[in-house]
Length: 433
Figure 1 (cartoon, rainbow, N blue to C red):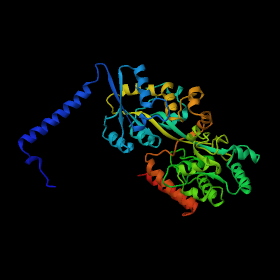
Figure 2 (figure 1 turned 90 degrees about the vertical axis):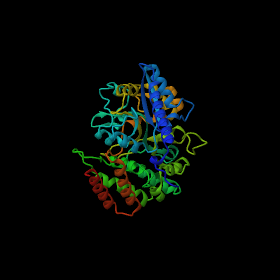
Figure 3 (figure 1 turned 180 degrees about the horizontal axis):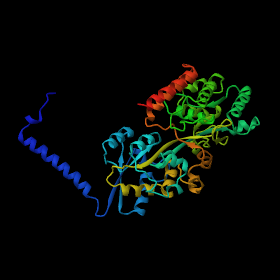
Figure 4 (figure 1 turned 90 degrees about the horizontal axis):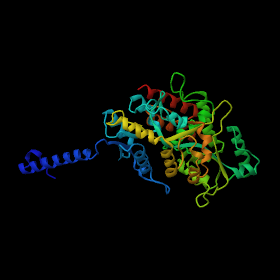
């Protein structure tokens, strides 16, 4: 198509274009002016799911607006639907000190990046009683160097699902250590070789592999960083963790195909009754007793993943929180909105509309929450050991490095010691950039 220069357009066309532009600007200005005198508009940015409910309860955005109207009639909440790649948009906005949104959703792996850059308002003094409402596990997940920078509103926790009927049949209690779990698997499989032992997702394409590694790292007494804050992914505990992942495959404690499974593929097999144990997200507790969807209805339980002596039972978290934009137009009003979101009515609303996990204290004792979320009480044991994924300013790259090396180790493409050494070396190089 022939290119037409703006400067070659006729004068009438130029005048019309200018008038249209002026009209657009006036329209935008009038939109801003529509806010009533004394009324403050707070813009909240999140993905489209905030307008969805997975039950008959109101969608979260409706429930938040109603709560704000009751608590702060002078504040109007505007919902801004974020692009699919929220992180990319937020990084561009924060770097340019953009004020498009006053509040935004923040994923757990972004906390270090946003906290270090000062891209979220610390809430410690702004909402001083936040810790009386929200469980420490939730607040710690969205904290950077002691600054509470997010109000959690939905999350996930990992744990160990197991078949109560099978353990009862063979005379076992739920395992307390990894060794006890292995003993159960070997005993049962000696009699029933067709059933799998431990299911877990080992595909390098998903973050579940990083989370399973984190579970085992702590189970063997390890941690992410030393006292100076340096990543220590080549510690003895880290080596034992990766060796354990590899040995589940080589010793047939887990199906060989697990090294290529995503989380969904792993859980489908447990739900179908094909395994004794499954490391998974706890969100399936809301329907695992539904006989139309589950072959293990009434024959399962959920516990924290076992740990060896000297290790720690942990549940690795995921999910989102809301944070206040320090460059927003209405920071004070945004804090009022976050304060409302952190309160029981709103947190309960998320539990009713989206299901577990919420971090509001004693929320799982609420009869209505229990009615909407069967077996929700089982989450309490997981919350006490909740930890975040490896904190990093460059989490996406760090996770990619870890998944590549871990998958290489469990598939046998790399020797375990080499994979662990590579993972640690590449992670340190990433942090020194």
